[in-house]
Image: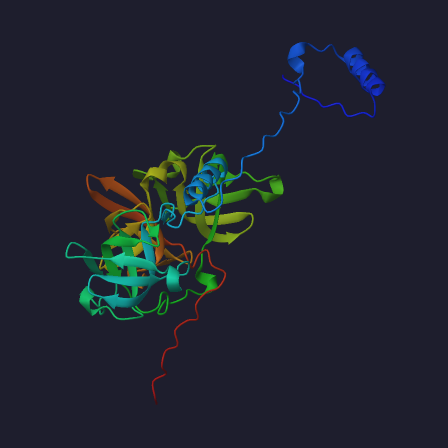
Length: 348
């Protein structure tokens, strides 16, 4: 290894003594030392003649080349990393374009959206606008971009879903007692009735019972208890208290990675949903047999609303996607929940 040092002493004798000590401590070859060369004398730059615009321009160019500190009056547009979907409020709508205010981009920094006759329009709100010419200030939309978002530049919309006015405004919040407990871990042992998940100690070990009604999701198939083995990493949704739980859903984490779709719901049409993915895809999924989870509570798909972030585990056959599990992710990961919608009490 190349070693470098600088000797700083008050005199030549002190320097010789220090070098002698270093040599005695460890033999040094000539390759171990960076020899410090005497500094070259600075040369004066001749002054440019007064009133010489050519000389000033030349000096300015030379200075810029040597320092690289010239200010670019037209900096390159900034591309947002893997941002193909944006959701927010429409501002200043006009034929073929509008500004979109989001939680990240607002005011002068709002996202500039353009669209044309090729732009697909989805009815995220079945009772809402389906014609982009009727977009109004304040309308909430979800936009799938034709390419990665570029800040400060027009972005072409591939598809636009016109949503309800407020996300989660009409959601029915499941009571806490109905929510499933969820946890993940590696299977330690398999037994006749389920399995145990290893903890850091025996006190933190969990025992999971897998009954006949439990659903096991294992990538390309619906599995059984015999499909699992020690060492498999699983996610469990169930009921109970530590350390004993009854599983409602068991997901084999490793086998479903290639079957996971993450993005935002663009439309919910009966038993089918349309998802705008974060990588720029528009995917239609058959959800007729899917388990739907809202705040870790099994619910009906009709409770879901366009604009919600979701994680979907789906089987793919050709161009057809069939969902096994649809899990809403924003409320589940949020500490602040919207207030339940008040219902009018009928008059006596």
